[in-house]
Image (cartoon, rainbow, N blue to C red; front, side, top):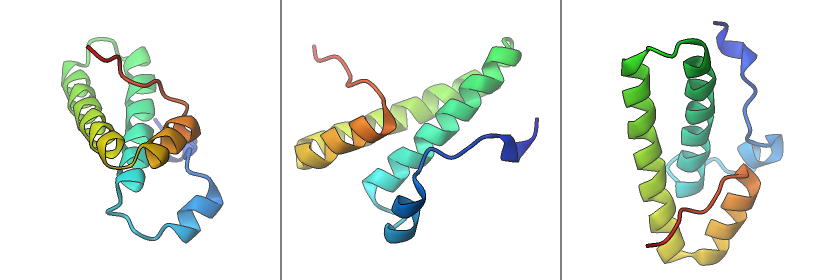
Length: 92
């Protein structure tokens, strides 16, 4: 597997202007990149259970960050969901 074969989903202008790597948006962007990379890896290697566990952990982290952002700033949350093209979690 070649590391550079995966294209980042962060637009170039976002990467330059948003230097704050600790922001919730940047963390969700990086988790989404990791999730997409692991998902494509697991399509080839179905029995890689350690990678499955890692994927579940990253999904949980991203879900918690999105829940936090949803509570704090709904506008930024909606914008981020639209940019990343991910679904909103179902409410109970």
